Image (cartoon, rainbow, N blue to C red; front, top):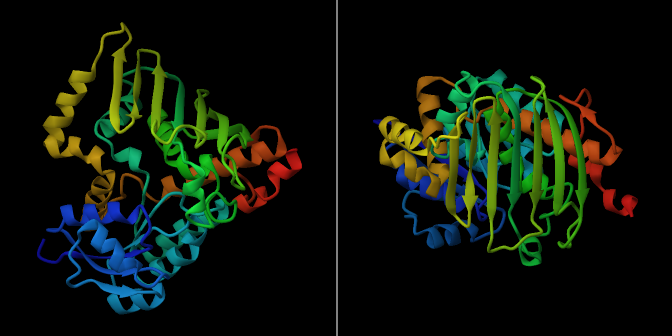
Length: 371
């Protein structure tokens, strides 16, 4: 590209290193112009640990000043989720496209508001829903939606992403209702997004239970929910951080009239099981299709899905189309998650989409009241 897109990253925590790897990989299409963090020295430390060249990169503690001075094309927002709304609003109103880490915001109304601000300013939103960018996922989504596997009967996901107390103690906002949410909100929301996307219909009802089992946090370390979809299919969800930190695993399954699809990760290794209605394994067929359409590099995106997010986002901006994980996916997944929380709070099923705003802050005191 003759004119590379300018990127500004707000927040220099854990996930921002993945953004830097993606930007370095796509250095012919985009360039990092600035890093912002309220902690002085955090940007320099991030660059050093990521072995990313500091030349041409400016450092700020004030994101408003950074956006006004740098005038970036893309603002990547990687701060605690409770801060997403006001930063996203400012960036969109200053002509920037935004890449938002999940969840989009901490309330259903705020998520819809950010989407509307983007529409008003003719700007694009890409969500950090990493699972949509894994190899084979787009191929499978298209085949399910076109009826290759017949009617969808149900889907399941589990996200067993163990974190110890040291993880939650590393920042005061982690595991709080106001800024982070629990295992369902933080670790499981992009898995919910993927399952809904693969199943090809929208949630119309949620029923859920939450628990605190092992982690000393304000929110849940274990959640289970069932969704009723608009086409009559059902989806079951399990999300927890109360498992081993050495056994991170996530698995997605969609069961259909003429076959089944299961894919996921276990300890960083991909798991795949695609079968037709006669039980014949189709893994090789889909891997060959992926290689033919995207080459070996598309298979390597699983090592850092943010490379796929940035590549898709840049192409979406250049060709004026919606990103694979766009603003709609952002606010709809938050609405579904808030419906799950509301169901747990009220102890009965909740209709989706929500008619009134619900925020994670509405859950404050939930476990104290449940005792």
